[in-house]
Length: 242
Image 1 (spheres, rainbow, N blue to C red):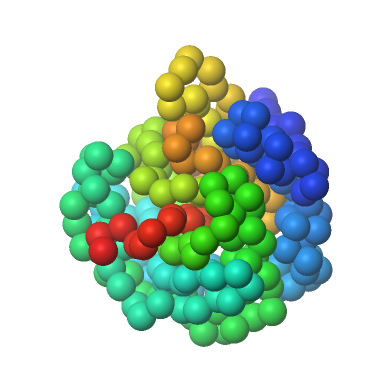
Image 2: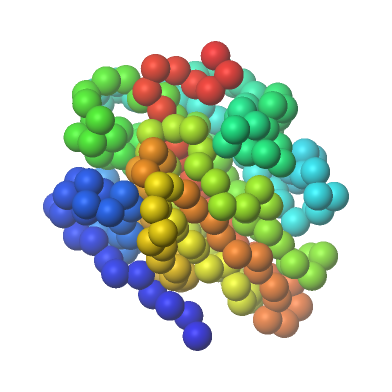
């Protein structure tokens, strides 16, 4: 049985994040938050068909493809940073932390699409409402987890924090799979919730200081399936790794 999450209206988002540390938005609420039509978001989907393999998986798997780029958002200005490695400390990623991981950048067609800066700006405003107004250092990750080897792991590192201020996980598509359940737990308490994102461009937004999260493995229903996501992380003061 697939469990669905309680949805948050766009105007209630800051209050919900303060109350429980996370919120789930429908695609329509995402569009209201970002001020863009759903068709603009759906038009980005084909880019996930051309993601290079992730060559850094320490579990020996070949189930993940990804691209990665970095941006700085100051007010309404979105600037793409020079291409850089993705780096996390071992404290936050025991499996892949401490590594300079170089991924191919997100394609220019995505970065220059109308919806892209609108998404980044909207979530920067949410981050500023929660923390305080400042520049936000954003890492953007396109992920495809597939079942070519029989099973795919969206979070091979397990339940974790990312070492940032805000984490946004957009479900882009979900094709021919079972599993992929999202689990969110209090970082300093016993409470937790589990649910499955199924609607394209629905959003899980996390206050990374207050909650930890993971997604369960996926398996094919028949043939090969996949789960596509866009993950945006917002951090004050600079990118991880300097």
